[in-house]
Length: 372
Length: 259
Image 1 (cartoon, each protein chain N blue to C red):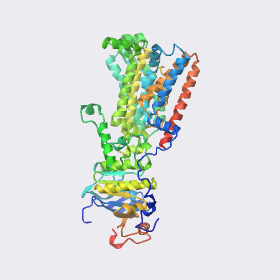
Image 2 (cartoon, rainbow over the protein chains, first blue to last red; image 1 turned 45 degrees about the vertical axis):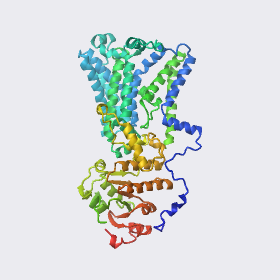
Image 3 (tube, helix red, strand yellow; image 1 turned 180 degrees about the vertical axis):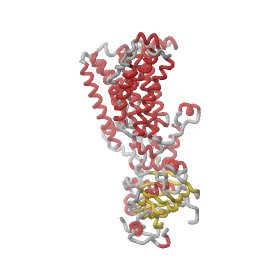
Image 4 (cartoon, each protein chain N blue to C red; image 1 turned 30 degrees about the vertical axis):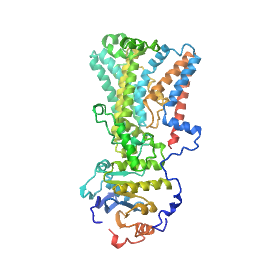
């Protein structure tokens, strides 16, 4: 502590000649690696995008003629649709630095509620379908309320609700599957997401366009539902105050609270919205398998987390995007499909997905160092 | 100083069990001044500030804002009345952009039907506004209003936090240890920022342990000891060692200025 009151600035007088522009940027002699780190930090989606491109190129060479074809791409897209929708729900949760192990269980429970209520109990689909959606919302709300009001870690909460929703599923479904034919008769609407959509025919019929590059593509309406869900959630995250609060809550909950954000409301909103999206995934699931199977989608939980992580969303919250998750889901689909077409055994698909996860998390950690 | 204080407290008391954090503490902030609050660790100055910003509700005592008695129920309550606080730990969200951070918690929605139905944010307005606020405070060197706050230096982040307080604090800005985590050069920038805020007519409360900084910018120094204000001194008439001596009890507070 200095003794002279008058000379308070004297200790810093040597600074007179120093650069006064504190708010300028030190862009001098940063290495290539550092610049790359900065680039990836600013555009985190670029990594999964590059991985996807590299995958497509490799498998086009490894499985000539078979992989790089509209028909095959269509197949991959159909295969990843359910995981992508669940991944969107999971992205919301992971952005808040949480994790939801119950997304798969919510989806199956909702599919059972929709299908069984309509087919077995003969309730009109106009009621059965909203009932399934409400079921998803309720499950999400339960997760959100337990996480916020009881202040328990999301991992433990959703581990518990995973088990609970699974048990409710067995109770309501009596472990009975619903066959596709029965579904066709009682509630064809629930199968609509599985019906095929040919973009070429669509554009030539409605707009009279002859887009030959679309020939051979066969999508399902489920894929279109997926895109609409992605668009809606992207909009919510990037263009509404709630979305900004989701990022802020995951980034630094204390700072968010000090800025006047109710993190409790934000979290409950996130879990509820995720539950609703899981119910949409249930609809896509029914379309995909035609009927309802209480045993379907056992690996969906971990697959959704895989898609989110490979898509560049940070498990530590506050960082990530919906487009990344879509690409992440596609990467998993492309690698599985490409490895199969290249004639490798199933075990190597799992091996490759495992490697991708670890690489993705490693890159995430590396990028985060920039902000430390 | 015959003018009415902007923010005033009389006889604030706060106990935590058997610990008395505030013992009949008084406080006065005059218009257009920088008031420094100093005190030893545990003197109760942070409880005092928390009481003034709604983070702590005093057991009894009176707080007046512009002469009107008020009782804050929460920090948001205080904020709505124009009292903005910059917290020690910055309270910015690193991954969000500068513009997002400035408007965090009070985002501006579009006025048209799109904003009403889809709750769309008016990003153009927020970006323009953010750029203007930063340039007013001489922080325009931050070029890209959309870059994440974590890419900024400590001083720049503090600048964003101060800019946010200045942008919305219509009556009082409270800065809690704004230079504690900063380097010499960056501290200087924040001090300049405070003087600029004062020049714009905003009264500022500065809580700091850094005596040279306090003596450089403060108009008056509120010395807190054992849960109460024991003196308000003029930095031009007293030395830093006087302030430290009063603060630690080694010297009796000057009789004329004892409060």
